[in-house]
Structures are given as C-alpha cells and as structure tokens.
Image 1: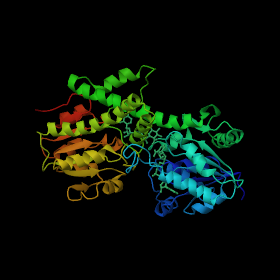
Image 2 (image 1 turned 45 degrees about the horizontal axis):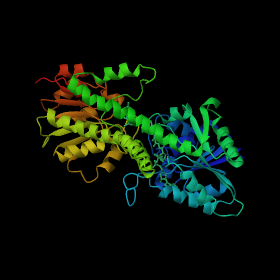
Image 3 (image 1 turned 180 degrees about the vertical axis):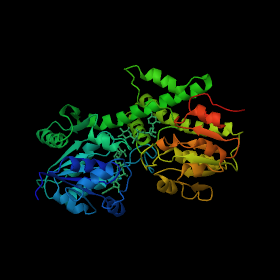
Length: 458
Ligand code: NAD
Ligand code: UGA
C-alpha cells in the first residue's frame, strides 16, 4: 500500500506515543512509525498492555496499529524511510556540570540530531516536539546542515500542550496547534506540510504560526503561567488557613472574573509532573544567562512556593498529630502526580512519603494505577513502606489518611467502615480538597483540608 506521507517520531514516551497514535488514527492515508532506543517500551506499545496509562489511548492505538501505525526499535531504517521526523525525546533538567539543577539536559536531543544526520539519504523536515530552551532550533540546524551533500533539513518547532490524563481529548481538540518556522521559502513550505497534517482534524483557525524562537519560548511560558496560577492559589491557601477563609470560595469568586477564569485555581499539595518544574527552571536559567536576574527571581519564586506548599502539608500533619509521627502509620491515597495517569515523575507524593519516613512514620501507599512507579521511586525504603491497591484495606490500622491524588474513586468510599478500622483519634489530611469534609468530621475524623479551617474534635 502506498501512503501519502511517511512520518517518523523518535521517542515513544508520554508525548511521542499518544501524539503519533492520534495522527495515525485521524489520517489513515499517512504511515506513522514511532521508534525508541528503549526496546521494552516498544515491545509494550506492540502488546495489549501499553507502556503508559492514558484514558482513551488503548482504543486509538488498537484502531491504527498494524494499519498505519507502527512501533519499532529500528531507528536507522525509520530515519532512512521517512521524510517528516518528529523528535520527542526527553529533555530533563541537567544533573551535572554547568547549569546542573537548572538548565535542560540536551544530550538526548543532540544524539537524535546526529543520528538523523548520519542515516538520512534524502531531505527531511525535522520537527521539535520536545520542550526545548529557546534557540535550540539553531543548534539543530547547525548540526543537521553541516554537510554539503545536497540533503536539506528544515527545522520546525511544534511544541506539545497536552496534559496527562486528558491527553487524548487534548490531542483530538487542542486549544491551538503552534508551528514555528524560519521565514525562508523552504521554511514556509515545511510549515505548510505540517499544517496540512493537523488540518485533517484540527480547525484551521486553531493552527497558528510564529517565528521559531517565539514558538520555543511560548511552550516554556505556557507552562510557567499555568504553574504560576497554582503557586498563587497555594500561597493564598496558607493565608486562608490563618484567616479562617475558605480557599475554594476565594478561587470561585476570583475565577468568575472573566479576565482571570476559573481553571488551574485548585489549591493542592503542590504541582508535580515531569515538566512544570523543569520548564520553569529552564526559563530561570535562560533569564540569568541573558542577565535578567529580576525576571529569573520572579519565576523561580513559583518553584519555591511549590516546595513550600509540600513542606507545609507535612508540617500540618506533624502539628495536628501532636508533633510526632514516629511509629505512626500514615496511609497515602494516591501517588500519581495527578488523577488519570500512572505517571509519578516529580509527584509531590514522593517528597511527602520521604518526609514522613524521615519523621519515622510507616507509610502505606495506595493508588489505582501508579503503584509500579511508586515502588521504583521509593526503592531502598522497603522496610518502611507497604503497597496496598485497595484504599479501604490500605487505611486499616492507620493513624491518618493523606489524600495526595484527586482520583475520583476516593470521593465515595464507605468512610464509616474506614473510620472503624483506623487507630483513634483518626485523621484525614485532604491535600486535594475532594472529600465531603463535614461528613467525614461527623463520622468522627479530624479533618484537615488545604486552605480551609480544620474540623477537629479536640
Ligand atoms: P518520556 O521520557 O516519556 O519519553 C521520551 C522517550 O525518548 C523515552 O522513551 C526515551 O527512551 C526516548 N529516547 C531518548 N533518546 C532517544 C534516542 N536517541 N533515540 C530514540 N529514542 C530516544 O518523555 P515525555 O514525557 O514523552 O516527554 C518528551 C518531551 O515532551 C519532553 O521534552 C517534555 O518536556 C515534552 N512534553 C511532555 C509532556 C508530558 O505530558 N509528558 C507534555 C508536553 C511536552
Ligand atoms: C502540564 C500542562 O497542563 C500541559 O499543557 C503541558 O503540555 C504539560 O504540563 C507538559 O509540558 O508536560 P501535566 O503536567 O500533564 O500538563 O498536568 P496538569 O494538569 O497541568 O497538572 C500539573 C500539576 O498541577 C499536577 O500535579 C496537578 O495536580 C497540579 N494542579 C493542576 C494543581 O495542583 N491545581 C490545579 O488547579 C491544576
């Protein structure tokens, strides 16, 4: 069968897999191949148990896989046989050398660029899908176009804005698709090729274009703004607890201002996920690089507030439970960084679990999807942690429950039964404000929400 376009994605992770599955699902006339160096991951993409949990993903992968969607470890062949290459490799925070803890580690990206150069036998469009520091496209271009053998590479920036847990909906109905390109004739042609792909299912007015640096920067800024809203409301949650105000009421009142809007104003134990912190730190690093120290400090405070909120949650637990957690058993409901994902990268649950163990508490962890990753995150702490999938069983014999992920299943459990099975006085620390606090209090729990007065029996 001959396909209209042959598309490759390098990197079969949380972005590469779902994004390419959506293109293949929407465009049966294109062949889409996803490659990765991680053979285990590729095997999982080819199996009935996909390597990531994402609502709706199974269905679209099953519809397209083997038809026009393929997963492979053969990177060399993938590069040779495809004309349009998305690069969706990981770009974590650097852990070593200059810029450690702040700058992006671009080694995976650079390796990919060199592989593309080595194996290409014809001209290609190379699309940055990974989130990258501003002006990375220039480095890509320099690496790729360093040989003068008639092969040309056009670099586009096409950042991804999907959120985990809602990735399929976000890909199917994106708020916008952003494509950054060079304003040269071939840059414009490459841009049109990519616009044509998205136009198969995305309304034209939602496909926007910009210069390549604006596109790279917009991705960092979008994440910084979203995270800044969470840090802002979390800062106010601390104030609410002192002033006996209710942060949910404050969010509602503030969010109804159409200039502010209601979303991303849920106070919590702090934001997690692989990107917010990494992308803000990257922005901070770039600001400092350009000598913009005040700008850097401003954005860095978003991350500092997030650290403060996580520590504050642990301090609230300590204070409420008579200033000692030693020998007590705390049940954590939820370990994923948000609901509807198995992803635990940068989950506040990791920090909180470790802090509780530092206070010499025993920890029981429950999560419907993330226990496998939780075990990896807490390797070495086996003597102090137990993993129990069922939340009711997990709470049995515990002194407190801390809700760390807003999974829907926690809202309607049998709290009378849970209360009976716990050590008294029993505590609930609702780090996501998802429970009916009054009901839990009436059953006998001492309830500590975020940003609201606690309901206690003392
Ligand atoms: P991930 O770690 O889940 O996946 C990256 C994959 O790239 C891994 O499977 C890794 O093995 C593979 N890889 C690395 N080097 C390779 C190479 N040389 N050749 C082939 N494969 C290689 O990461 P992710 O969450 O999918 O994120 C990818 C990028 O997308 C990051 O830059 C991230 O900031 C950005 N992003 C992520 C999200 C998200 O929700 N996770 C959303 C938007 C943007
Ligand atoms: C985020 C962005 O929403 C995506 O647009 C972006 O593409 C992605 O980062 C990325 O670049 O990786 P994601 O991290 O998957 O997506 O999930 P979010 O829904 O943004 O949640 C991030 C964290 O903030 C979670 O820990 C969540 O629980 C927390 N959060 C979110 C709050 O504490 N309060 C809120 O009101 C909203």
